[in-house]
Structures are given as C-alpha cells and as structure tokens.
Image (cartoon, rainbow, N blue to C red; front, side, top):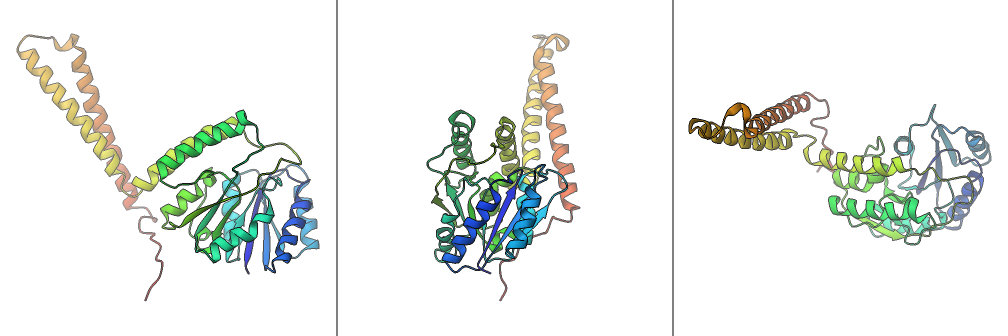
Length: 310
C-alpha cells in the first residue's frame, strides 16, 4: 500500500463526506493505493454514523472509535498502530488541510528521502489574537529549544515514512512535538513544505487558551525527558551538589563570623539561607538517586531500537 491517511476527529460530521471524496479523487488521479483511518475521539455528534456510512461506500475507509474524548495525541497514536501504508499522511478533519498536497508530500518521502515532512501554513486564516500570534511565539520557542528548523510544528498536515510512526509513541498532548520525538528516536531528516491553509467551512475551532499553556508545559517535559530521561542523576545530582556546596560554603563563612563575634546565628539571615541551600541540595540529590533506582528497575531502561543488522 502506498499511502495511509490518518484523520483524528472530534465532532466533524459535516466535513467528513467532502473530505473523503476529496482524498479519494486525489488518490485515483495519482494511481495511489491507499487507506483512510479515521479516529473518532469520542465525538458527541453523528460523526461515527457518518464514518460507518462512508466505510460501507468505500472499502478503503476504516474507523476507530474511542469510548470518550482522549485527545488528539491518543487518536494519532492509535491511528499509527493501525496503518499499513509505506507513507503515512496525517491531516485534520475540518477541511482546512488540502488533500491536494498529498502527492508532493509523498514525493518528498519516497524520492527525496525525508523521514518526516511537516506542512507550513505560511498564510493562515485563523484569528490573529487567538491562534496566529501565540502560534508564532510557540514555534519560535520550539525551534530554539529543539534545534529543528520548522516554521509550523503544530500543522496537522504531515507525512512520515512508515518506520517513523511505528517507532514513536505519542501521548498526553505531545502531538505538537512529533518532529522532536522523531528526532529523539534517530529520524533526523526532517523537512518542510509550504501548504495551503483554508478557512474553516463547518463547525467551530477546538482551540483554547489551555492548549497554548499546556503546549509549553509539554515542551519542557519532552526536552527534559530527551536529555535526562534515562540518567536523572545527571540533572538532579548536579543541581543538588551545586546547591549543597554553596550552602556549605555559606555555612562555614557564617560560623567564622560567629567565632569572630561579628554576627549572631539566630538573628543572621545568612545562617538560614545556608541551611536552605544545604537542605535543597540534599533533597535534589536524593531525588536524582531515587530517579536512578526507578530507571534501573524499569522495563524500558534498555529499549534501544536497532536500525539494521548484517
């Protein structure tokens, strides 16, 4: 199979028939063998009924339905587990992503050798205050922290080699950082393609301020895990040791001043500051030690992915 299209969705009943017909037309025009995997993330409208009808009309359409709303990351992860195509395309169900971009995305993966190609909505039709300005700031921060030169990390329209989606796990709200996760797993050839962004035709956007805030929290989480996930002592131990050392030096200075009758311990703020740093250092060091114990006993401690053997 050439292409698998994964479409996570939540309450998008109006757009699904038009989207499936559009994808089918593009696939037939380019002689692609394909499948469409729609993941209903606990919709409360008639989305699942529409998917069921579309599946009866087109055998290439498949549906997965969640019991409740788990979020886009969970929907993508389940979709990635189900796909069979050599190239995997993800897109949103709201018709703001154009299926006409699929042939070029497919070519970049199969001909140019990219592991992942992310869409870049250079011209957007979203509200500037609600999405455009926060998105620009978010993307700038992610570029600086991850070192991946993409303009639009959160674009739903992406293409992957099959090996990429089978070797990554997307959870929480980490779908924004799939390029970062892919790079973390050793898939370093990541490209970008300018794609057409269309105005929403049906329904309302699911974007809220909480997604913007959670996005930054997830970014710090994934960057920390990528650097210290298997060796937590390298972070906690280092910070704890520095804190303890500073506190101990301050304590020695305070004791010398007390012996010289320059200060009184119970009235000196520096005595309490030194004790605070010593206590913080001890706690952080113990946290790193406990983290190492947990890591050493984890079933995931040696899950390394072998690329090939000879």
